Image 1 (cartoon, rainbow, N blue to C red):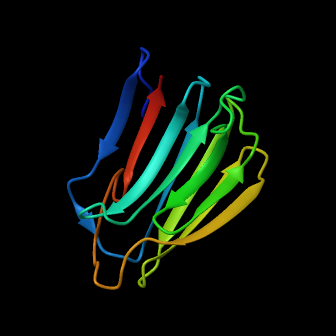
Image 2: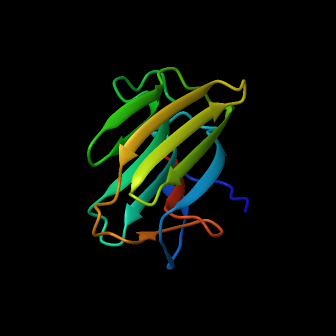
Length: 145
């Protein structure tokens, strides 16, 4: 699936699935932020009631301290994945959820540099996630502010 971003400030483009997915599963998205205002991109997963969630975001504006970074947040942890992200760079974000609810996030930039983040998304009683693009899980949005 290919998506293009909004055309005006304060607009969001996104996709959300109305289908639930049971772990284990994996999803991957490749994004490029072209405007460095706010979070140029955001990708996330949540369980059905959104009580457990994980987001990977890209705030590409070096003037936007302390938010300038590419990072991941979950209910239980957060990690800086890239302290100096840039506009016009392709980033591939891979998220895998195993059968116990543990999540692995891989971030790769266009040079091949790789970062890894492991978090816990689902409680043992959770069995599904709400999701997006084409057979994966979560929700993705491209933001422009």
